[in-house]
Image (tube, rainbow, N blue to C red; front, side):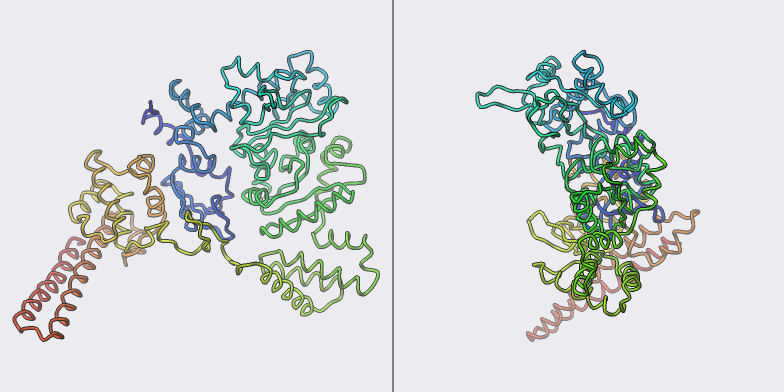
Length: 633
């Protein structure tokens, strides 16, 4: 049983696509649209466009496109029904029970359900059982209030080997999904056991706020496993692609335009409770490129807060270079010896921590300080090595203008000539290019086609995106059909036949639109994208409505006059251009035939017949201009 169309429409109209996509992409307004870095392929120059008026998105780099349902399906890797459910929950719209039951049929949705059941069980075990009192006291000893415990969904996993398994069974969840969600393990004899036992629990959420995994911290001295254990990677959880707390802090990060990066769960929770909300945590793992790319959707700068020990310094240095490579600004705030963000905030408070952030230093000062500790500045040879090391980090920055300003700062600091440092920078970048097996792509990084071929992100691939091969008139006609009123649709369908469109994909799409119009009396692009008959054309449809018109020479003039039917004027131009191209192609074919007949010494009568055909076509071309010029008046 499908979700009723009226319910789908209710969810769609209640959802702002800009709000939804902003949870994944840092968008900037550009005219009537929004642009940002595409979440579906690696790029440095924004080619991802969101059109609020049409409630559509399209990437001109990788050609992914669609409506708000398509976006959720692609980013969350869920079915259409699951996407509708997610957005319905977000909008507070209740779906019929039968449809909600149906959404639980897919594996990913069952994994989300398993995590939700586990999260509730762990929270109740913490707050409502005698065994959980010890764990609750642990959290309170860390300074966490009851409100913070509730907000972050903190919990406790009982010490029994099958406490969660038994609870899940009582709630109708097959143990298979507990195992696939990483919540249960299997022994050699085939029996199952709870993965988390006798530990305090930290739920890990996706960027959109769905529980995807858990971390369990050691609580009892007789627990011989690691201090922290995490859910293993699953179809809905890849550790290196998430940042802990981001679902709760992304709005504050976007507002303040920078993020404070810490390491642990308790670090983030203590800072959040203290009122510092623009913070994320790496969950105890080394910072990854995917995490930086994710963070770059919300922030243009990062402040790394690190422990003063050598391990903390080394981790901060690695993080600095990765962040610089991705085009973000980065500073470093060093904690006093013996402190971590959690203890510092609890002992000294919010204002002291923010003062520490305000006093954060540039990556140049930080690296120079670390090199100073190693004694490299004590000799001329060491100074050369140190400055060269700083230049190697500077070379990671993709912005040439920014690199030049840093060069000036380094030159002044070490009393060196700018030209000397520029030569060193050129040497480093040349070596970097030589190490790579393929040349660098400056504006957009490479992407991989379905066939496995690597192509530059800005290279057009007409096999993946046939719309790139449409003529301008074909593109405009299809675009007008997708976004015009009934008068324009009637005009185009009365004037154009599918045979006049030369590209086979354009012809097929035209025929589908005509058939849809005959059945429904309208053409709604947002509805069509959810129609199975149009699934293979969804990317083309979204690209077409994201582009400006091409063939009309009067577009720049027409678009400023609301009293005229601009789309009708544009449709007349597009139809006239399409027909003129077809006639000119036939004229060229006749001329070619005449030349061929003459070359072969053909009889004059054959040449005369072809000449008459040519004259008729030329007259037809002249009448065509007159006809559509009068239509325009």
